[in-house]
Length: 426
Image (cartoon, rainbow, N blue to C red; front, top):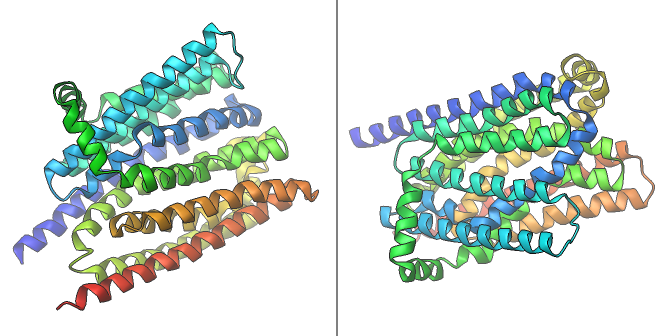
């Protein structure tokens, strides 16, 4: 009894530390947003959205998402194996990408983005992946304070650097270099010993790392594409609306995504990671508790979502002008349109991890592919039908929200079936 109480207390403390780190980082982003929107135009944010999407999606492929296995490892040796394989993939992918960039520069090729932007994206992706490995290992090692500090510095450092550089250089260079500086600061504050340990192991026992990779092929086969598609779903709307409608519209969506996805990042790096760890311990013994938690979380967060929706419905434009500046007045309307989608994406953070724990990675891949097809196909279809961007902003997120809700119900049903299967042998 005391042991169980101690575990619950430890989980509560860990959650509090992670939530404070990510929450304070998000608060810094919110505080600095009015300054950023006066230093950078919607067009600047629209162009930066392409860079951000590239970094976010590439960081998944850079490690083949092996770092997520650190949290679910039943034994410390399992978690170490995932960390080493993730690091080996990161070093290999980064080296190959840098070689391709160098070759394209030597041959005089002109990519869609300038070479300096692509090089910055590679470095930012490398730092983001290292930070993710360090944060996950800190949580797995029951050092949530280290993870919280890294999350806070990474989130707040990027916004603060972009604000400072907005005065000095502005435009796309200010946003890109600010992102890099924030990533560097975040990496310097997380657990770095696991990376040094991993590099030594890779150099000393490469055959063991290759064996570990082969034993964990489910991740690159199913988890990595699923994670990449889920990340694309968060980052693609701004570039797609900019492409099919107008770059300024892409800027509005990019800002709303920046503000709206930040709570998702906070939840993913605090509640989501602890849920992953705790659910992996309970799934075979007390799966009913996981069902209760997911349902309870849905019910508790719904009133807050409705309250935010009412505020945006009545005063969204006025709030956008007051907080962000007159050129951002339309952002209130865009935020209202995306609100249901962000609510269901928040709940999907838990069910996505649940599918990983249950080994239903193929279903997660199907769900992610469905969502990305809906966002890309929806933007293309609404533009081809001559619909206004306002109508498209309403229609596309609504369809995506319905799709998320359907897969959420499927995940809960699968857990219910797993609970029945666990009880049968007894």
